[in-house]
Amino acid sequence: MSNAVALPLLQSDVAPCCPPLAERPLTAEEAERTAKMFKALGDPVRLRLFSAVASHEGGEACVCDISDVGVSQPTVSHHLKKLKEAGLLSSERRGTWVYYRVEPAVLAAMGQLLTKAAAA
Image (cartoon, rainbow, N blue to C red; front, side, top):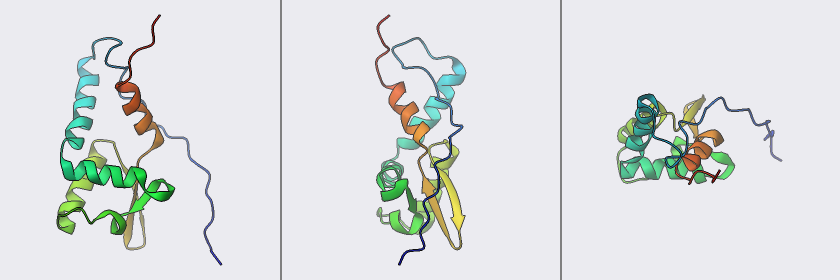
């Protein structure tokens, strides 16, 4: 018998970083935020960790479940910290483990950024 309880989804307060690239030129602030996001994803280990979290069952992953990416545990922690600093991941400590998740608004913002602007 499981003690798992389904919790309601929280509304994310993550705002899209910027409009689609084809819509208009980015402002300096938008470009700075976007570059930080892409820079964080520019490392293959970080991209694998981000993908592991985003695709994990239930939308979140314990660090113990995603740390097999070919680098040491301290290096995994460093890369997860960089992804958090870029606003791509959020985390929650539960006992001795940390659980990471990609907020749905982050994925939506990333997708919107790379889509073609709607024709007027």
